[in-house]
Length: 126
Image (tube, rainbow, N blue to C red; front, side, top):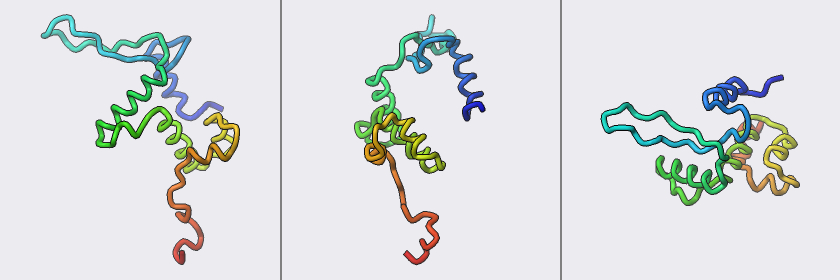
């Protein structure tokens, strides 16, 4: 069975002309040839994104939408993926494998549980 969003993954690899090596790479806009020339197309590097570059990207995007950018980093993506998987009903063993956690205790530290009584059969009396 194909993974969810495998068509999107294939489109990314095709659009980026990636046939081998890292899938997540540096993107940048090269300078325009002349001021009146149309904008340059984005360029895609060959080296993988580094943990530091991912942290900078996450912080910049968080700050751009009004969050305190320094409170975010690469682990924010991991935490969000694990919490989203949990909310979507993924089995805890799958989440543990995704997060590469050796124990369930450490996995629990990453997950955002929200309101534990949402959807509970007696939530109206609690």
